[in-house]
Image (cartoon, rainbow, N blue to C red; front, side, top):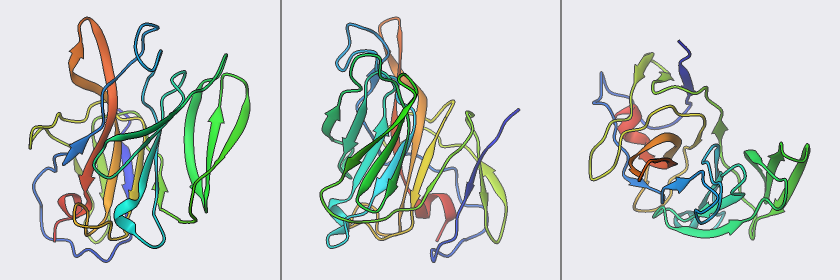
Length: 205
């Protein structure tokens, strides 16, 4: 069984055996169906762009495969949807300075989008699973559980981490994870999305 691994180097102090974390916020649910808006959107890989002067205005990016690329604020609200275009299938995204670099598997190319202001963030890719392993002073595996009016994270295919202080919502950093099984589903259609977790809820204080 594959286990998703998250390696963290951070100034947040770890405590013994913190509770299983729950998302603070979740993005809108996306549906892989031609009739959905955006159409054929299957959430996949996130990245974090940290605003260099106002971290509370940082942006989370997420690929949606045929649905393109989404941008979210730190309240998990959708700011922008960039379409993949005919034949496009956006699979992975990384932030390099003020650029969002996206792999387009549908057309076998890399696409680059400029972000308004320069910034940087730490990111990590993970394997599809419902468990994460945290490496630090103590190694432990965890699940991201339901709570605070949010769904648990299942079948995760990607994550992104920032250890920066990102304003009042995420003063000790942010972990964004892909959720491959959002509940409730849209009728008979499965839904996906991204979940925002406070980094101190993962590491403890």
